[in-house]
Length: 92
Image 1 (spheres, rainbow, N blue to C red):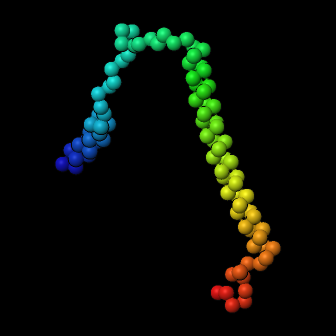
Image 2 (image 1 turned 180 degrees about the vertical axis):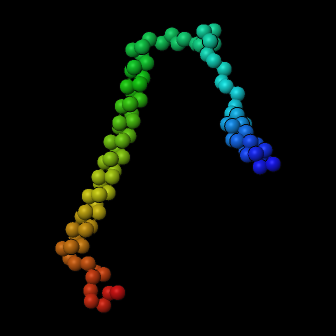
Image 3 (image 1 turned 45 degrees about the vertical axis):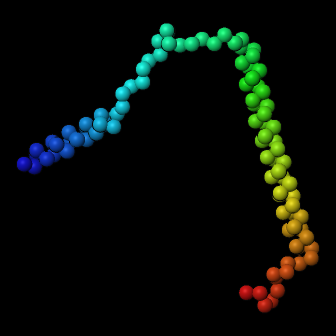
């Protein structure tokens, strides 16, 4: 009885990947592939335009972060010059 359970367990381990598998995707054939008629220069220019837009967005985000950091530094410098209002002997 024990060898039967052992063999069923091993068989279930071997069959488990097949149970989770799915049907394969259909292969691309020459008749199903659509060829674009756009010249490569136009494709490159649209990619370059999208990259420029992404770079511009990143620059604007970076400028915003830099301004926030500058503001925090100014607040910290003012706190050290004037003294922290929460820094006194009776503060817990």
